[in-house]
Length: 338
Image (cartoon, rainbow, N blue to C red; front, side, top):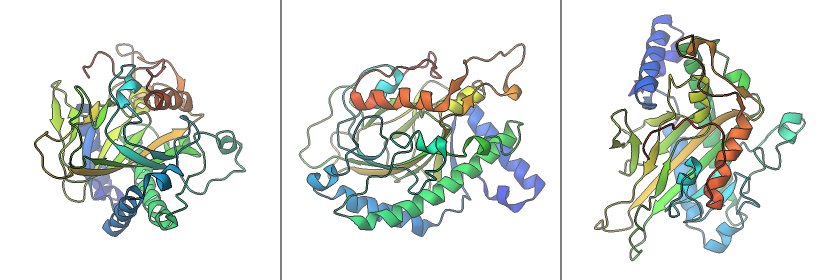
């Protein structure tokens, strides 16, 4: 649990305490619960209400928001159409969730770096024609957590001993995605298949993830002891974890931690609903990711070759959506068990 409110006070000792706490959490676990973040609870509630409305739409209405191809990270992902374990190069049954993805709603299309990815990483949002009212609360929430994610990168930079704006400078036209996820087992649904997850084991792909989650069991994190540990956020907290790109930048000083969402016990009565909203800040697609000089020395040489952020992201994204093992050259998972 890390309270980051001291970062915004301008007090040197308070900021130092925040950076030390963040460094400790990300060295040991790679996940932390963040409070003192300043996101208005009313903004969160409006986002949740809008998501409930979207997922309650008939299939035909939701189908109008299907992405045109697997490399467009926008729109609706129906139940059972993805399997996140494929992002690690393994196979598994389809995951038991549905999702709705948006990116930044207004972008600078005159920026050549944006224009070149307008068909893919910077694709326009796909809003449901049957429910135009969801746009405003989701964009409002997107803006709030995007600001929080960027603030976190400033804390990260200071904790890593580089210029405070290091990551901000690599987020001039960033890949940003808000993924609203609904896990719901309707009464009478069949039991999961062997090894089937609500969301399969995976690491996140980019810089940092800011996750809202209902206070419902299901999320599990692979701990330093090699065991899976259930995580339920405290009231008002965000779960924050790192992606592969930051693990590569830090030479595994900080890790991109495996996590998954397990199904509820078979005997659970009722719909067994769990909601989450994950904001992914993944940096500029043309940002070069290579080991920070503060994270390597003669005894700890760089583990990973340099990679462009967008190349890594696309290699990871497509596999789970086509139910094929992702093709990627950089693997931050190593020999960990999943």
